Length: 323
Image 1: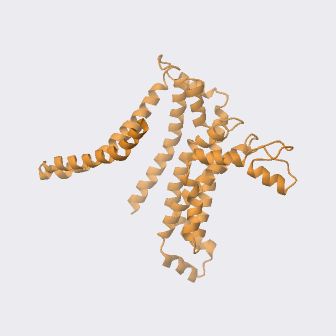
Image 2: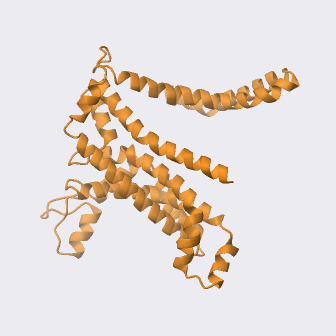
Image 3: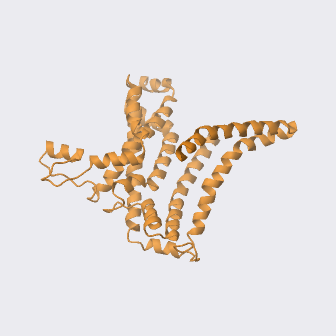
């Protein structure tokens, strides 16, 4: 019954609340003097968005920074001691190394695949079907994708029938012994990254494809008429024009790579040298029960993401200034 009530509130209550806010806002704006109405109206409409940003982003961030200065139970002020302790954790260097691997390989491979698939799909008659199939993994959650691929990478000893799809194919078609994909460094990290690539390639392809559609066909045809080869057209025309879009997609991928958690937690729980920063934070909070260290790791993760956001914001402002 509680679930039914919650569902009813979500389906009926939220839309009614939204409609009520719109009606009440317009009624109040209508009672204001005409000169003040134009200045107040924008704040009425962006007010809810600002409220959500403050409540669900700014306040939690400030609270996390504050908690990182206290002990395990958030009772005694310890200053920067938690930050000193996380540097000394045995897995922190492994976590940082793995996050760097995620940023480099995950972001780079997804961008490359997304760009290639966007260009190739644009040249076939069944473009819609091809894009739908490539984008399909984005329709499932990262947890579900991790469970699927955990079965694909499953390992059994050589004398036992292989239940994992990859090892079954490997042992059935070649004399190679089954491989423990998820417990053998460094291949296990690459296997986890491959899952992320499988899920995110469709996203990159769709965004880049939309930008590709905006490039004038006449420009490309003129270059080909002048004798430019396809590689030259790609390098001298397509890449520069797609640069801003690729930068935005790359920023999104880097942020995901820095805060990657779902795939690692479901498939290996951070064992076998697959630890990442977000999983380390989870362990400190729920296994070690140390609020201070978990909060300090969250702050470090936030500080790692902020420069990426600043670079993207500056690029956006530069593009707007050029326009």
